[in-house]
Picture (cartoon, rainbow, N blue to C red):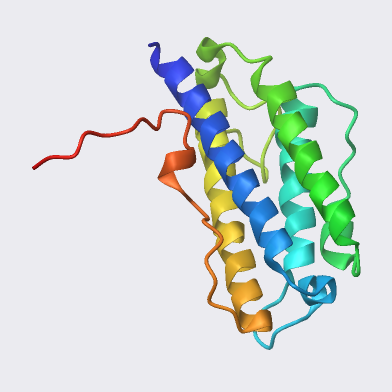
Length: 176
């Protein structure tokens, strides 16, 4: 398979897996209000991180690559409070749709092109920025998991970052 196609498939697979994990994290809060509880030393409750992650993907992949009409309000991602769990879950699904809209429009050869616009005042390669978006997502997903464990007191695992959810996962033979 072409290296660009491999990268494109890997980014799509990682984001799909991590969106599934984010959904499980949101659903694992027994009390919806806990999504918005603040913790000393932690700037953002899980609800804001969910809004930020969903907004980030809808903006960069959906709007900038996929041509969707999504208009980002980054400040609101961090300022809003008390958004119902159902709305957070809808935002996760909107991010999933944005990924499909954006990545499906790319050809593997475009991954060596520059991103359509400047990022933080610099130009970057499309493939590298897509990898950046996946690591950014994983970073905040870990923060959501930490927040959930801290505010609920539960060490329950929700299966974040599961290799068996990657698109290339295949059963392995047991070695004796």
